[in-house]
Image 1: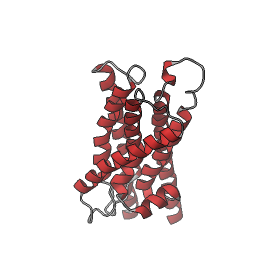
Image 2: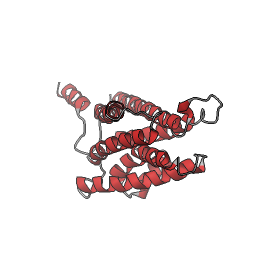
Image 3: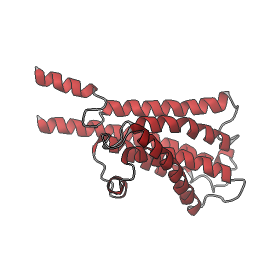
Image 4: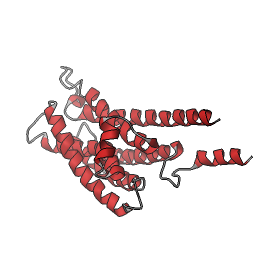
Length: 231
């Protein structure tokens, strides 16, 4: 009776005492971040009468500026070693992660063929900040400057625990999605959404969502496997 009650309780725990995250907790984190991304699109459409096609720069700015505080605040609660790193410090390093991540994303995009010029500069900057929110920001809030964790999770692709799955898989999903999203750009279709970085942005958002779904699926799968192993 007590064992069954314990298992039922564990199912609904969001963050346990040891800092691990349940699959339900991960779902709520994704839900909150997704809702605020939707708020960004709503504000762009209904308050400024723009979208990614008509005004990419303003739309991207609204998206990342609304999404960034939410992601920074939520993931800072999931930081490693909270007894050594305060929540405010995690938020502070998230800001540094946002800026450095945007710089790295911009360099990567230009190296892979993104157009260069003053007319493209605002679009590239705001796209890079949005990509940083998807890729660098959660990891910076949780890992900080721990090279060991960064290398193991991203370079070696060996994330440990649900929180790291929440960080790594959507980040890779956004990168791969953005890469696939860039494919229509050189095609001679004459569509307005083929302009940089519109289709890349849609691809990155779609890839991030797919990564979130995949990470949740893996969390449930590993939990089921663990329960079967214990039984």
